[in-house]
Structures are given as C-alpha cells and as structure tokens.
Length: 202
Image 1 (tube, rainbow, N blue to C red):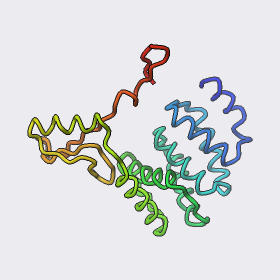
Image 2 (image 1 turned 30 degrees about the horizontal axis):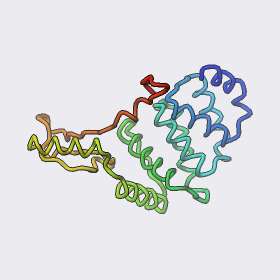
Image 3 (image 1 turned 180 degrees about the vertical axis):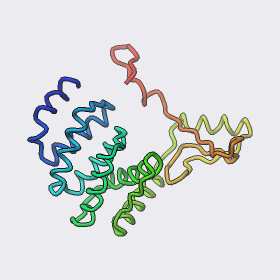
C-alpha cells in the first residue's frame, strides 16, 4: 500500500475526477492514511471540482470522513462540493445516497459543520437511509445478545435509531450521566478470517 501510494503521489496530477475519487475510496476502505497523498488528492479535487459528477462527489466525501480529513482545506472542498451538488444532474445509487447520509452526520458530530443538501436530494437521502434501516436484519449473534439482555431484565430495543444513526441495540434506560447507551454487535467475521487454518485479523 505504501508503494502504491508513493506511485499515486507521483501521478496524482494526471488523475481525472474519477481517479481521484476512486483512490480516496480505496484508501478509506483499507483504512490506510498517507497524509502527503491525501493533501495532494484534495488539492487536485479542488482544482478539478467542476469535473466531478454526483457519484464522484459522494465517494470522495465519504472517503474524507472515513479518513478524518477535517482540516481547513477539507472544509473548503466540502463547501465546493456542496455548491456543485446544487448545479448538476443528480444521479445516485442507493449506496451513494446512504454514504451522503453518513457524511452529513459525521460532519455534524465530528466537525460541527452543517452539510445542508438541496431539498430534493435530502429527501432521497433520507428515504434511502430509512429503507436501509427497515431492511436490516439482526444477525444470530445479535439475537443472542438480545436474549441475554432479556434474561438480565435490561429493557432495550433492537435496530434502534440514535441521532440519525442506526444501531444494533439501544438500552431504554440512560447511564448515570444521562447519555444514551448503545450496543453494536459485530460477529467474528467482521474482524478475522480463517486462512489455511490460521485465524487472521483483517
């Protein structure tokens, strides 16, 4: 990854909008942060923002949030993309719409930044997220955790919504500080895989 990022840094000025978005997206999915490459890609994105289509914008913004790009330059790019979304024909798939929902909440919670989408797009983003929540299914492990909570007489709700985000379990009673308590249930396949009989952390 370090070698690939080094090569990307040398060639980033030749990347088009899709190349920039895809590179950032790959870094986010691998959770690999290379500050020099990120700064370069954000600079290129700012210069080429007029060439970004709606899908490129969604992927780039989601990647920026995952990689915790919250400096002043990132804020400028977010503003440019927000203006761009109001100017172009908006074609998003459901995954991109859900990504925009995550971006909105990430920017609000972590950066105190209001990312107000055009009203027509906001409705689509909200609808896509609500459909995703409605179609989500509890895993076997999740159901087992819920049964244990029932056995302990701890009131809770499964597949709850807290501050606009879907969570696995919400306890009905807040903690001593008054904060809402949530439980995320991720099974072993979220973190490891069995390769030739050896358990490896992803």
